[in-house]
Image (cartoon, rainbow, N blue to C red; front, side, top):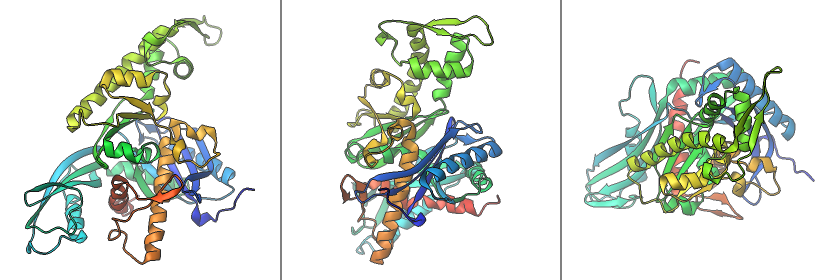
Length: 442
């Protein structure tokens, strides 16, 4: 028998991608896993490289996806958590210093909070805003590598911070789309954080791992080490570039190229054994075309090699080359290419696996939702559900969320385990930029 959930327990996540828009409505079940009550997926026509380019088309697609989710869940939804991504997302590292008046007094959370808030005052180019600040580690006087300095004593605190920036206009355009679709914004979530929440294990995040989310318009890269986000980057190539390469190389239309990629595509040409000939029907009675499976793979491999070369360059630039014991996790629609893990290993030297969100989904669940295509949507949903549960627990305990930040809970497996540090920090600092965006003229 299907259980009924009150509307206020249900959270709705929205993934606005270059090729698709996905709406997911769900709850955390008694086992701490995500139970998806309804979902909708529609083609995206108003988004380019992860950024809204046509508000009306995007708003219509959002409304259609929400409508599908509402019908499946038998609920109406008005508030949504939505992902933000795109080539405009950038990251910098900054060092903050605070000289203390009383070196004998214990360092408080308020002191650390104020250091983080100071990072939001950094001067940026016009039109850009700090989205997210992640504390890395601290130095107390001459003692380095301190993750949590609260309770220690010293005359000077120095902190390394990972600062993620984005364009205010990109966030405002998303909010305009939501408004036109009759929806209210609950919170925006950086999509790489959403994807990581869905596909990475706590052990990987601690050991060091690079997550590569290959979307339609861009490829998002996020590096974790010692449980902390260390580096983020956006590579301006994704699955659509591969499709265009196939279209030009085989002289076919985009839709046919996409079908070739999905059905026959391989990332490693040397693994093509039979080398079958693929016949592509002509348009309106025109002569059909032929392409060998190996030649198709060569087209795909050339572009994927370029993407992984950029991934390897970003890893080197981050300073974590040779330190990522957890290897690489590939997710997003582009991760469905056959042999992509092998090519990733050849190009970067890292062992790779495909990241699927099924580990955190309740069972049984729709098999379709276990695809890497839904990693971002499921991740945003899981992030929001964990955040909601955290807030309720803090409220019940009558303790401020930040003061209780050392005591986290995560709905993983069959018990409530401590939240990993990177996810908690994401929850603590995410809202600052987006609350400011609410005040902007829409």
